[in-house]
Length: 266
Ligand SMILES: Nc1ncnc2c1ncn2[C@@H]1O[C@H](COP(=O)(O)OP(=O)(O)OP(=O)(O)O)[C@@H](O)[C@H]1O
Ligand SMILES: [Mg+2]
Image 1 (spheres, rainbow, N blue to C red):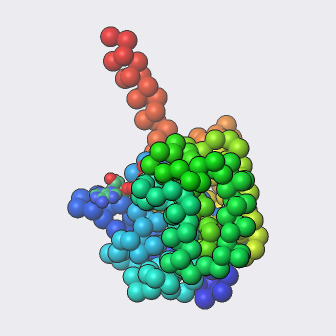
Image 2: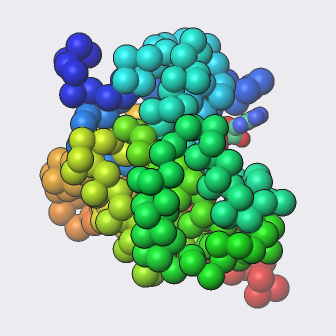
């Protein structure tokens, strides 16, 4: 399967720790052409660390990563050309306007203005961001910064999109538009890796989901596969319940709420 040319991203038994924290622990998964793959897990599960390892921003202590057959540690520049990345942190180019940022990206990526300009105009219009085009990024609201970051990541038509919690802070209409963009991207042969800690978002958008907890894959598959797993465990559980159970959060929630009530009522 690893040699299958439809596998655009292959992650095999990768591990990364920070001092005493095992952030990613022998994690493996593959993403195929045309697929939207969701990494779902609670805060601190290792989603961002996994994404940074794939982009070559961090070095794994063990395991192998192949992005379109390339090695993130060796082919960082080529990977940057083939991948669009939306980071968890808000945009860093705060002293630029979106227009300046897009011009900058177009020039370093040597994009053809004739094809890029109308595409950009369409993205801006779809995401209701035309009016922010010439304002400083630092003055934009969180959601509007996020939209600019998404456009910046897709404007060079990368083969793989890697988005770390891309919908956080977006309004309902923009969520729909971004979802549409991701689907169109996969329809033309791309792939998407998407992280979220919100079950419904994963359910709504992803073809396959990998649930991770403490750096480990605890369940993986299509929504149907995961739903079968739910039924096998307990008829009364819905997907949210199974996510909480698989990530060891189900018992602790009631306990936490009880303790909170006691503290806040005293
Ligand atoms: N630079 C770092 N130094 C020390 N510990 C780190 C560092 N980066 C991540 N960690 C730790 O690694 C673990 C995984 O963090 P990571 O950011 O990958 O989680 P996440 O799944 O993206 O969480 P969230 O949903 O909050 O974004 C956490 O325990 C975190 O504290
Ligand atoms: Mg994260």
